[in-house]
Structure formats: C-alpha cells, structure tokens
Length: 275
Image (tube, rainbow, N blue to C red):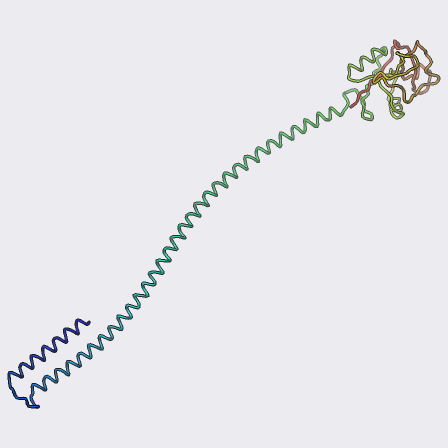
C-alpha cells in the first residue's frame, strides 16, 4: 500500500513539473491571472486530496493489518496452546500405553498366581484326603488298641477271657501268657462281683502259695493279698492245695467264692490283660 502511495506521489509531482514546464514555455508572463498557475494550483489541490485519500486508506489498511497481526498473534497463542495440549496428549497416551502394558503384565501374573493357587488347592485337597484316610486308619488302630480281642470281655479298662476247657493251674497260666495276659487278679469287690456274674463253672485265678505256705501271692505281679473273698472255711488245704479257684459246685456252695485246690486239678480258667 505504501508503494502505491509513493507511485501516486511521483506521478503527481511529474505531472506538476510537466505543467510548469509547459507554462514556462508558453509565456513568461508572471501575472497573477496566468492560467498555468491556476492549473498547477488545481493539480496540487487535487494531489493533496488524493494524498489525503491515500493516507486515509493507508490508515484504514494499517488498522486492518494491526487486526490481522492481532489475530495472527492470537493464532500463535492458540498454536502454542494446541502444541502444549498435543504434547500433553502424547504424554498421556504414553502413560496409558505404559499402564495398559503394566496391566497386561499384572494380569498375566495374576493368572499365574491363580494357576498356582489352583494347583495348591488341588494339592491341599489331595493331602486332606490322604490325612482323612490316615485318620481313619489311626482311628481303626486306636479302636483295635483300646478294644478287647474277639472272645474277650471288657471291664474297667481290662479284658477277660473265660475258658471252660479243663486244664491244670500251670497250663492255664501258660495259656494266658501266650495270649498276652495272665491268670486273673482280683483287685476290688466290684471286680469280684463282676467276675462272679460272668462265671458258668469253676475256674482258676492267679492267686497261689506255691513258694511259701500261707503266703498267698498273685502270679501276674507277685504282689500279696490286699483283700480276699474266700468261701468259708477256706483256705484249708495246707501243702496239698496251693492254687486258688472260683468254687461253687465243688465247694457245695450257692454262690461262687475263693477256694484252694491241688494245682494239678483240671478245671477251667480266666485270663486278664490291660486294654
């Protein structure tokens, strides 16, 4: 725009100079009423008007340029902000990509842990089943260990085996030992009453005075008498009768009680052992 004004100014001056030259060529009259002077004045006035117009136009264009420059500055700010936002988006995208990758890794780790947990649960269930089986076996063993063998009867933590096959006292003693027990030892009135309630015939028990006449001792632990349940008037056999049995029919009594007999007399016997 300024170049246009410059061209117009040059053209106007050139035109004025040309007019002045023509006027000087036509007449040298310096009268105030010279037509050339008026022509130059008109041209100068016209040139001033044009210059004013061009100046106004230039000012207008300058304002427009300022507006455009302001817009361009704003556009630059917007571009800067857009650039910042783009950079921020790139960073966030990178972070999201990293998080997705991390999530995938953690997901795989979780699946691996879950698989291990499943395997451990399966192993624990297997071990639990084994333990249950072992517990059943233990219970069976306990039941066997805390129960009497077949043909034996339980009383107060002891097992008793009643045998009515007639043998001597020594054979009865050996048979009880082979069964893991001993000829019965009577420790209390309750035990004596219970034994009597189970008896079906005369039987040997472990009491004897084989070593010393009149000193009655139990064959199971070689202890002496703490209580006794003799039939009346027993014992009365002396050296001929050194072994004790439960007697009823032989003694011609109504109930069973203790009696001394020759050790080689054949009768039944009762064995005892701990649970």
